[in-house]
Length: 416
Image (cartoon, rainbow, N blue to C red; front, side):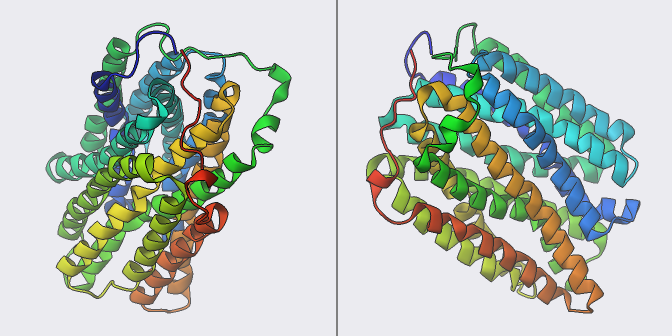
């Protein structure tokens, strides 16, 4: 990049902007139990609507992230935040059922594609390797904190004014992000370091075996993460309703508990990033993913636990399910050829969020299949979460435990 060196005030402002863009992320999950009743949605249809947001992201991110190899990421970020706000306002105005919800949520996902990865590139290029893990962890923690705040704000507003007013309120976040980012990201920040040959496509990325292994692990991580984020509130609601709580209060309490689970995950991003700066990346990635997978397996079969104990387990799960994200993203950026950093990040996001988009739909499909087979709810949730655990185990198989040098800890992504 052109201009000054690392600056934590700059990072804090960019994180604040990203927090605003994330306010639309979890608003659908926060009111999912209510909308299932209002619109008569099956579990599969509900999962597909959540997946539609990821699908919109996937369809746009390959183009938008690749464009950062030629276009200032700042411009893409500002356009993406504006789009996210407008799409967020469109949902409460026009969503009336499964078809309209699918379309409008997919459009909203395009806004995330224009902000999350371009912002990550700005951070990766601004900070040196000795501090990059912590800086990336702080930025990615904003993603997690934003998903939690989205749940909390939507739950609070829905209880007072209904879900449509709650969606309007969350849509103001990305519009505020446009203002913050326009003041923070001046012209010339994040200018591309080089202009690779236009005909090269993704071939240089596909030849980078280190990057590919890490991208596969990122896909496994996102499978588990998005599956959990999409269904943790309905899971909590199901637990409460099994204990005799009615739908509306169960949804509110589940939303508050779910927001806490998502919020605590923000703590692990910078901490894990800092530890990886000191101890190396690969071994830490694999250990965290194994522990996270064990949490997925355990919580799925704990529907009948006392609600307080279930939330305690989920809070630990929330810490572990996010912890490897910053290390994986930092390692992928470091393993990329500088001139192809945008394309590498595009492939990372395409693979990761494709897995993340599939997970909620498959999860809902398992619940519906178990219901058709007449299986008890506790067993249905158990098998659904077991699938998340099985998927995340692909990560340690791809990355291994071969020590810090297997995953570079001092890449050359900083461009000046």
